[in-house]
Length: 258
Image (cartoon, rainbow, N blue to C red; front, side):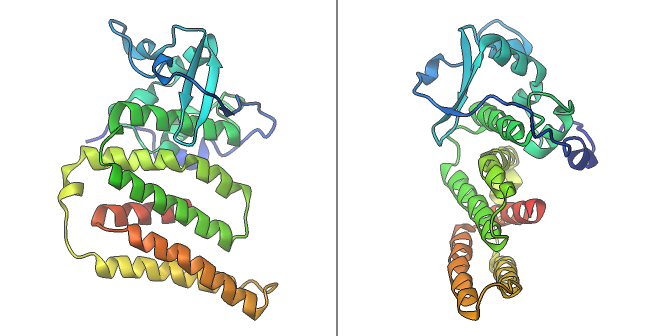
């Protein structure tokens, strides 16, 4: 069903070494006319070149209102070198990143650079494959992934990983959306998931309880307060899991990223 790709082991090895001094184009707030950006193909041009910008700059943006703006040459270089953004069957963003960001000092080699790579991935997978389709599924997946990240961020009492993950969640959502659209069996598999869902939710609840009790620097009253607060996040996750596919994706995201 899918094209042959790099071995999954590569996802764990190829881009783990980050260069903390690597400079990346910043994400900036910008007011733009979106129909002038290099978002859609131009006619009568082949391969990646149909996504080149013909203006002085190229831009992509996200739902949060962030915009990435590049000089024409820099933008077109990225487009030329990353045909995976335009694949009919994109792999997960972490696999694509591992397969195509192997240069130690490359454009996307730092942690911030990886965030930018995920933003490119999100922009083109959505623009080319998922835009306007099943908005209710996207909303549920976005909420679940964000709440799972929030839950473990609180359990771990913060850390830069969770901030980077929050900015990368839209890419995971679009990958889930692409699979949902492509494969009919996901949409047609309907049966009672209550027991599976209950086990997943119970596992999240038990983990937050155990981790909180393991926090010796919290008093008993503060531990209970934290458990009460984090339990609300688990309830929010539970509400959004309404079918087998969404449950499956919630499980994959939770156990794949945390």
